[in-house]
Amino acid sequence: MNKHTIHFIGDIHGHATLLEQLLLRLGYVHTNGAYQHPEARAFFCGDLINRGCENIRSLEIVRAMQQAGSAELVMGNHDYMFVLYHLRQAGTDERVYPHAQNYEKLFATTLEEFSGKPELLNEYLNWMKTIPVLIDRPDFRLVHACWDTDAIELLRAYTGNRFVLSEAHWNLFSDPEHPIVAAIHRLTFGIQIKFELEDAWIKPRIRYWQNPQGKTLAQVLFLKPNDMLLPAAKELLPERFYPAFLPYSENAPLVVHGHYCQKGTPAVQQENVVITDYCVYRTQRLACYRILPDGTADWVI
Image (cartoon, rainbow, N blue to C red; front, side, top):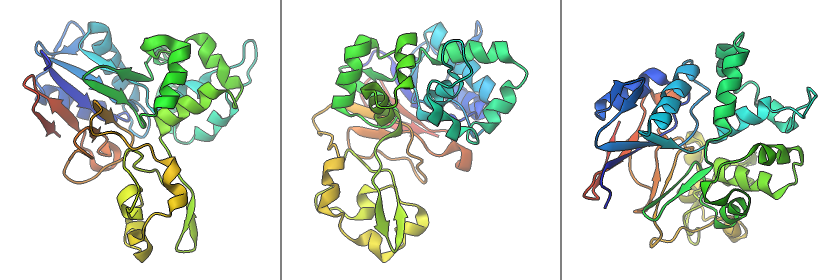
């Protein structure tokens, strides 16, 4: 059992006001420059920025909590790509990872907030580079999108058990074929498969933790609402896609994700798989999965 309550908080996406409201509901008090709780600790599941219009304040809150010892966090795909978008080859204006340019529109609100504030931008980029990719503990695991053991062990070989990228690691992204690129992409973006649905090609995210055998498309894929209504969504997933899945053992520790935009009443995916992202930029609701010291759990939203 944990000595303190644990709060797993979903993707913030630049919604600082909603974050502060949630922290107050959870019993945190703003003291000495950071939100703190005498009997609890917060764990942020990644994607601190983009989509909302309070990105700097969101970064400020989470960083202050981390530095005060009242929170830990992992890197989301938005955080990861924002760093890569700004990373340049030494002595040049060329991006270390040119593909990051494709995300410029997604970064629009964050870039606008940092416009004319280059020193502040560099300060936060340097901090974001130090955010762990994942947290691996005996009682729980936290990673933004996918617990892929092979990718994690590859990353561990570079970073040790802290899973923090050094400057040298970030520079490895200049080679898009480097294995560390694929590993971090898998952990922060998850797994997608491409196939034809009703004469249209789609590339949905998958519920990688499930055993896909005998499951329908609607059961194992994150389909768009309109696609869920198609007759084909009730068909069984073709066996050729089974190898893409990484069934998560029910005997493994709890694994917590953000990333997968959920709607409706919060619920666990399976007894030891939790998603905390309840689509704050659409629903204006920020979710928290709370584990009490006696081991019982509930949701605060």
